[in-house]
Length: 313
Image 1 (cartoon, rainbow, N blue to C red):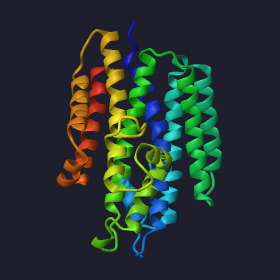
Image 2 (image 1 turned 30 degrees about the horizontal axis):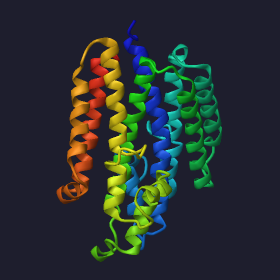
Image 3 (image 1 turned 120 degrees about the horizontal axis):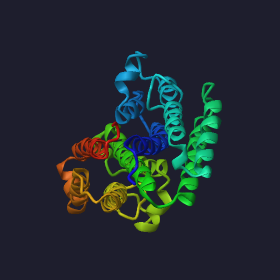
Image 4 (image 1 turned 135 degrees about the vertical axis):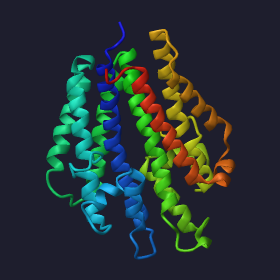
């Protein structure tokens, strides 16, 4: 029997918000690393975090300036920010509790315990940002490990998988956009050791520096890093890998439900675009523009999945 729409909705958004909590930590990690290489006094790298996370407007409703301490607090602890780590984990737990009977005991306990640990740690201002970011990443990894290690590969798994990879694709595109928004001191810095260090910081923020070296070589080249994070199907946080997983889950759901919904066609079109484009074509056409269009299409796919599988009925 097909899942009730509200159950599919709860599973999808539980996983999206778990992934979002980790992604907010990774965006902050990218901003922190890039700030260490900023040669100007302007807080471009911190503003870029808000822009890329899509929360700049909400931030400016509370604060008049882009102060790093305020941005960190807003991204980690502020319940007025629905995408903050604390808000995301709370929403994930609420959705998880709603669909608790669809989860294994290990998955629910990992989620519930992680929410309690992070709620306690984020109840006070952050005085050691790297340690807190590591805690967020380790706790979300614990939930993910419990989920992948114990859940039956059925439609419950597929709706969860869709939530994870729709959110992850969005985040990888946004982390790459952080690099776009951080303006180097001069155009001549492009390709310099400073530029390469900043690209290396992006890799570190997604825990991919060593795997990049395995796949390419030790040299950090912007074109290779863009390829790795966008088009390499073996990189688990790349756009191409995420959409391979999205396509697989939508295929499984289509077979299980006996219906090819429009969202499957949308996902296949995005996969085809990623397969057809080369890094050179993407850069020549504008990396920022490509990422903006991708984020828009990814959001459209999310809305189509919700409509096609009656999430709100």
